[in-house]
Length: 204
Image (cartoon, rainbow, N blue to C red; front, side, top):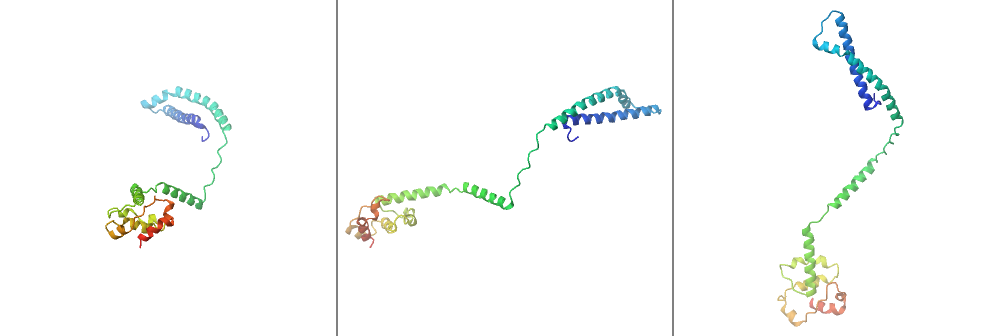
């Protein structure tokens, strides 16, 4: 019955149940012939014997064409799908898991917005201070990080310390020596001898 299909399986089960009921009726008839008395339910079952025989006959006639149809359907059915490819070995699976972990870790490796804002503020403050050659107060001196400016020019740390020095800290230096004009941030003029000479004199 495994290959009969759903329709033929229902017909077969129905025939089996009706035949069991037909066998019970035959046993009741033998009991009546032996002189036993039947109750009302058993009498109702015995009266359904003609109908039961007609239903069994009808299902038997339907079962033959259904079996032929199922056999034809099985014969024209497509071949089963090929077996799936073997799973990767343990080492390949471990590498795939590691790559997936690294990928998702990179997706969620997002720096806080506060760090980005602080970096932009520090760079803007550094640029404006260098362009204007202005003094920086104690409340904003931490914005200019020495390590961030030493990569562009080796003279930036002493120059920035000079720019951060308040004007009242060394009155004789600012009065006796002219203050050179600070070139634009990132300008090639910062490395020329004509520009660096007066700045180096002020650092003595």
